[in-house]
Length: 188
View (cartoon, rainbow, N blue to C red):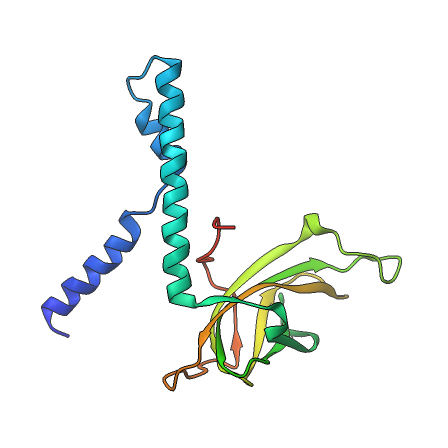
């Protein structure tokens, strides 16, 4: 790879990380040298406005990258959870759409209650796992998630994003582990 391409790639990566906005940092930096309550409220208001604008721009960029929200029926749960390896379980899903490639999935996992049978799961113990995938229409995928439960779990699809299917789409993985960082975290 030539030097210009390497420098361009490095600048693109830096640009994506340098401009992340943190509300608390904005307020703390804005408060330096401020002794008036009125000025402090104005700084807080300005930072909150900036935070909302950042979230709006970030959401728009992510929707361009991952597509638009899909109905939760777009992914059908094919079979119940399975024990894959120590500390991991999985669920198999199929993309039921005819014209959308699923690019992002958020899965909720909570331990199943011990008793009585059919009792609702405890939402306070829910864990959210995010997956960035390429799942063409009709394709299957096994979503693997960390688990220490042996009996079973309450699993639900919290959301999915997708875009129109392209001839360039290739389903790379028949299984996927959660992403290290949820690209949509904090934008709810």
